Image (tube, helix red, strand yellow):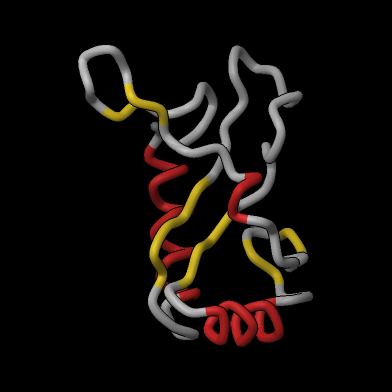
Length: 98
């Protein structure tokens, strides 16, 4: 994980915390330079409460972040790939996932 990705995560968490408790932030990363992995170029933020999510969606839509326009939408949690457990029992992330 690069420092720039960590900085983006920190910036996103800080900005989103204005709307409620941020439970998780995921930034899928390309594998071997391929941008074909689902979710690459997107940031997924999970809030503790649905109401917090709604506030953030409304407030952040259309804003600029790192010279990019923020597009917000609800995304089903089940479609965000969860961490996998390795044979040793430790958590590992899906390839390309932060």
